[in-house]
Image (tube, helix red, strand yellow):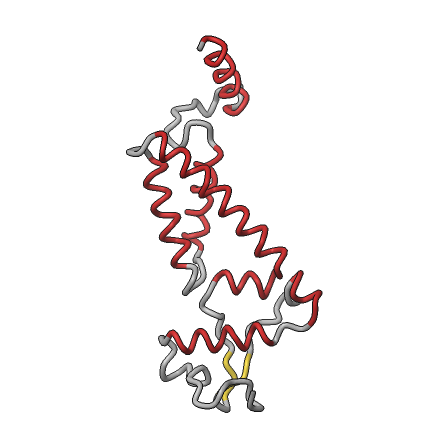
Length: 174
């Protein structure tokens, strides 16, 4: 690699003129990944505040990598990314099961929105509203009857034990 870190003719060093190209992002991702320093940084990520600075085309580029998964990998390491992907997989799986059981329910809509959000994160990071939306996905995935369960908030009996008791009763009657 040249001294500036980018291949000859790279457009990564030209963020003010053309940051929308796919090649610009891929080149930036490559440089950021190659810049990881050692096993500890790969496992646990960079020190907080290390940023995404890289040199290219005679300029310093300090923009985020425009890929949320790579952002997590760089800041939280393989372990952090693995935990995040596990959370996504559990949420997606639970919503998928619920969606198959009730194809026209809330879970199907949330599953579609979650899939769209997962694709969006390939090219950008989430904003506050997407973080809140992901919380809704996760809550719907772990709530026994989904978002429309009709459970009384003031009910002193927690929803999960009540659902388990109902399942046990219905399986004994079957």
